Amino acid sequence: MASGSLPDPEQLAARILRGERTAVASGLNLLDNRLPDARDRAVRLLACLSGERWRSEGHLVGVTGPPGAGKSSLVSAMIREWRLAGRTVAVLAVDPSSRPELGGGALLGDRIRIKTTGQDEGLFIRSLANRNQLGGVVTEVWPMSGLLLACFDVIVIETVGVGQTEIDIAEIGDTVCYVAQPASGDTIQYLKSGIIEIPDIFAVNKSDLGAPALKTAGEIRRCAPRPDRRDAWDYPVCLVSAANDTGIAEFHSHFARHRQFLVAAGLLGELRARHHTAWALRLLKEEFGTFGLELAGGRTAVERRLREPGCNPFDEYARLREAIRSRVLPVDRPAT
Ligand SMILES: Nc1nc2c(ncn2[C@@H]2O[C@H](COP(=O)(O)OP(=O)(O)OP(=O)(O)O)[C@@H](O)[C@H]2O)c(=O)[nH]1
Ligand SMILES: [Mg+2]
Image: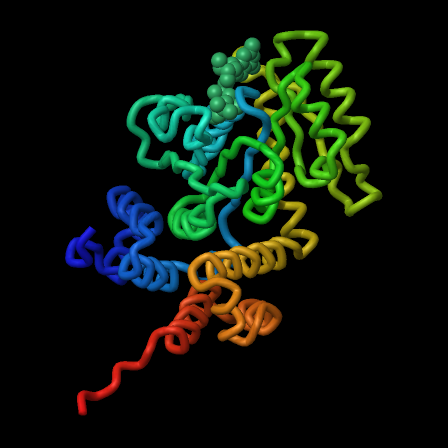
């Protein structure tokens, strides 16, 4: 895209803060554009958007689980509850269809399966191809969540849980939910692995299937973290059916309860700062490599700068980027 057609970040930020949906969409497009000029503008856009709200407001919710477990169906049901409670919701569906075996990005859109009723100004849904060849969640998800946090109350990130994705989603969400598929080998594998420690809320969907769902819920209850092992959170395991609309209200109530728990324990700001540092490092490394990080003083120095109290997180990220670039790019010499 020619830089002339790229939006002005300051003007775009003002429109996003007013909640203009077309501005939100073009902001996300800008963050998804890896051309150098677009990157510069994207960073300026984020610096304009990420104020105090970034530290303490909104709710970042990660939903993960094996393919077909019913994540999108459950997200649809939860959207209804949040909207009834007057909360605005944005969903980022990190679409697995970019996996080669699923035929590239061709299926994108068909796979979101988040059902909504009519035109709703308080709801925004965007799918994003997961282009990360090395597994895990694409780095764009973090800045995109930051943008959405500027104008929505709840941001849901849906990812298909496969290894590194599970770990990545834990570095995005304030609250992470694992949706289990009854009687599935995926769930058994999951329970055996260390990542059972990651989710805050468990849902066994398709409880309409009866015994297999009850069995899976029992297995998760046996393996889920105990409150005394980590903190005072109780790691609820909910039997739900998105198809029959059962158990949804109770399941949904745990999300607000978990956020309240984080706030009461003074953990929300700490969690956001930790997550931001991890992703900013990842973004810098992706753009400039380990050598670039060294030019900015090394990983530890960068971490320290990003975590300085009172710093605007994306502002500091922008400054670090500039610092690296000024040392990477050759300085223009005056003609002799
Ligand atoms: N029996 C039953 N089927 C369900 C339920 N919820 C979802 N399904 C079905 O399960 C299939 C997958 O549902 P999705 O909501 O798309 O699952 P997902 O986990 O988002 O799938 P991917 O994003 O493709 O990994 C669909 O055919 C749904 O109709 C449920 O509560 N009971
Ligand atoms: Mg889905």
